Amino acid sequence: MDRYSYPVRRMFIVLIGVAGLLVAIWLQVVRWQVLYAREQPRGQVDADQVHMGTIVDTVGMPLAFDAPSYTLVVDKRQLPPDALPRVREWLISLGIPEERVQAKLSQNLNTVEFRHLPYEVAQAARRKVQEIVDAGDPLWLRVDTVWIRSFPQGSLAAHVLGFRNWATPPRAYGGVHEFYETFLLTGEGYHPEFAHEAERPGGISPYFPSPYERDLVLTLHTGIQYWVERELDWAVARYEAAGGAVIVMDPNDGRILAMASRPTFDPNRFYEASADAWINRAISEPYEPGSVVKALTFAAAVDSGTITETTTIMDTGVIRYGSVVIRNSQHKAYGRVTPEQVLAYSLNVPTAHVAAMLGPETFYRYMDLFGFARRTEIDLANEAKGSMRHPRDPTWSVSDLASNSFGQGMSVTPIQLIRAMAVLANGGYAVTPHVVQGYEKDGVYREVEWPRGARILRESTTRLLTRWLTAAVDHISIPDRAPVPVAGKTGTAQVPDLEHGGYKPDAQNVTFVGYFPADRPQVIMLVYLKEPHKGPLAVDPNYIWAFNTAYPTFVRIADHIVPLLDIQTEAR
Image 1: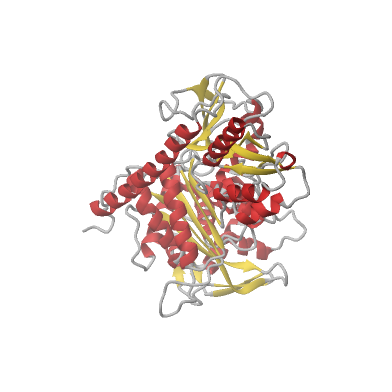
Image 2: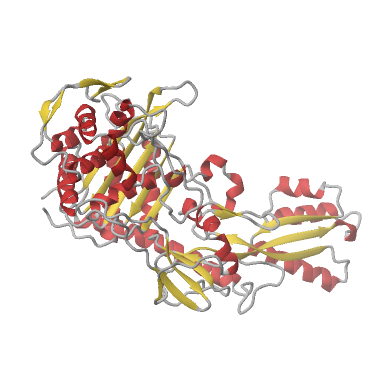
C-alpha cells in the first residue's frame, strides 16, 4: 500500500466520531429549543435588557446566544419564625450546593438571591410559588428571569468566541465577543467594504437568525475544531507541555477553519478559569519560532535572485556572526550542501550564510512583506504584534541578521507565522486571517468578501519552495505520515529566560507548519507546543524536537481533516 493512500477503515472511524459529535450537539440544541422556547423573546427586545446577537459556525451550528438564566429570591421577612430550616432543606433538594445555601441564608439581609440557576430549578420554584399562593401563605419566594450569554458547545472554540461576564452592565472579553461587541449589541459598528447577499447557512434554524437581527456566521468548521482540540489535549498531556496552540486555515483566502489554545476554559463558567487560561496563545503570546523561518529566508533568497536551485553553500558546522557563535543543532558539519539539503537537515550555519548573501536591506524587506512584527488584523480581540529588530534600530547588530534567519532573536505569534507560510502555499499572495464568514442585519444575510492581498513572491518561487519543503517532510525519520503529501517545516527554538537573561538551559518551544495537498494546497496548519518536557523516544525521554512532538500531532489532526473536507488522497 502506498504510504499516502488513506485506509477506508480509518476514514470510517473518523466519520463515525464526527457523527457522534454532531448528534450530541444537536441533542443539546433540541434540549435548549424545547426547554426554553417559552422564554425566548420573539419579535421584540426586552426593554430593560440589551441582548446580543447569535453566533453560529459555517453551517449554522449554534456557538453562542442569549439564553434565560434564573434567580430565586427568598424574602426572609415573609417566613414564619420556624420555617427557615425547612426552606434550607428545600433549596438543597433542588440541587443548590449546601454550602451555598447555608452561606446565603446566614447573611444578615432581608432578601437573599440564588443566581444563575437552570431551567429545571426555576420550574420547581415556580411550582412552589403556586403552592404558597394556593395555601394563602405570605409570598416569601420569587423567580426572576435574566438573560445571560450561553455557549451550548461548552469549551469548544472558547478562545475564538471569548465570553461575556455578569457585571452590570455585562462586558465582553476576548475573541469574537470583544472584537464585535458593538455590532452584536446594536447592529452598528461593522460595515465591511465588500459583502454580498447570500443564502443563510444551515437552512431553517431556531437560533439563526435571532430575533435581534445582529448575528455572526463564523468560518469555523465544528468537526475540525473538535478534532483539533482533542488532539491538542492529547499532545499537551503526552509531551508534558505547558500549553500550546493549533491553527487550521485555508491558505488561499485566510479563512480560519479551527483555532485552539491550551490551557482553556468554559465560557459558561469563565469565572472558574485562571487569567492564563483566557489567553489565546494563537494570537496573543509571541514566541521565538525557530527553524520554520528558514523556509521564508530561502524563499526571499530565491525570489530576489540571490540563490537558485543549483546554488551550493559551504556548511562548516559552526561560525561566528558578530557577537554570537552559531552552530548546527546536530553539532555536525555537512560540507557543501544544496538549499534542499539545508531545509531537510535544518542547518543553521548555511542559513545564516544565505541571510548574509541577501544583506540586511533585502532580508528585512522580505520579512516585513511576510508580516512579521506587525498584527495580521485578524478579527479577534487582543492580538499581539511580536518583535524583530531592524538595522535602523540602535540595538541591532549583524548577529541579529544571522539569528533571525533561522527564527531566533525575534518573536512572532502563531497567527503571524501561519500567515507568512500561507504565502508559499497559495502561489505568493498575502492573505488576511479571519473568523467571520458573514452577518445578519435588518433581515438580510450577507457574506463578507475578504480580498486577497498583494503579491509577495513570484509563483515560480513558491513552486520551488514547496518542492523543497515536501522533501523536508519526507526526510523526517519517524513512521508518522499524513494521509496526503505535505510541504512543511519544523521549528525547535530555545526559550528566552526573561528573569536572568539569555536562554533557559533545558526548555524548547516546538512548532510545525505544513500545508496539503502539497501540489494544490487546501489547508495550512500550525501546531505549537510550549515547553514540552517529555519526548516520545524510549531510549531518551528528554530528546525533544519538533519532528517528534509537533509533527506527529500535525499528522494526527490531518488524519481527521482529510475525510472531513473530502480531500482526495491519490498517491503521488
